[in-house]
Length: 216
Image (tube, rainbow, N blue to C red; front, side, top):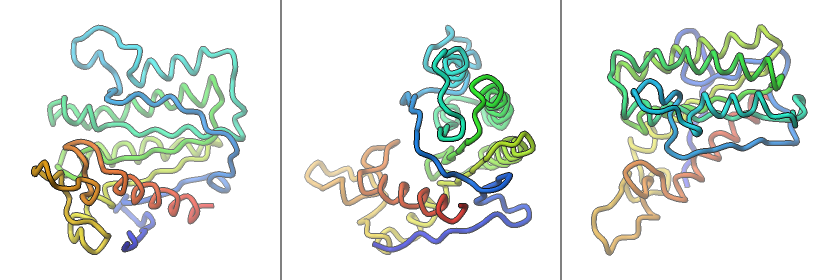
């Protein structure tokens, strides 16, 4: 399988970055509160408050009496995809400020010291509003290192862009998902419209790991 090249942040490209006060991550514990299909803040959509949106998850972490050890806990946040699907283009870039505010809450109450942000807002479909959101998010959370917080930012959109340019070069038949019921979806990058296949997830995971190893 081909290798997805890594690129560091340079100037205004904001394609990939790890910002840190000293080093990135030397961690032993991961805290996981993943909820598939959740948005940053359900109130954006004039619906009832949700116990699964990012705001609720942060409040849960802040009110939890069992505070994890800040030195060995990684908070990994993979956000934006559902908001990108549901929100109008003019408003979507503003979601980044809410994520940044909730991150401040994490660094204040649970005393989170290691934050990792992963982004692929359009799942391989780029847009002007999406790129503005990503830049806003990058700038906002990058400033957290001034609070003595280790911050990592991984642009997973790089993986989508580079695999789609030549799927066979990275071991896939195509981007998928294939429409033929007889075909093996495992050979495509996407297993369904929104979710990568097992092989696709493996490429993403290898990319993130490579970024973290490069940052340490």
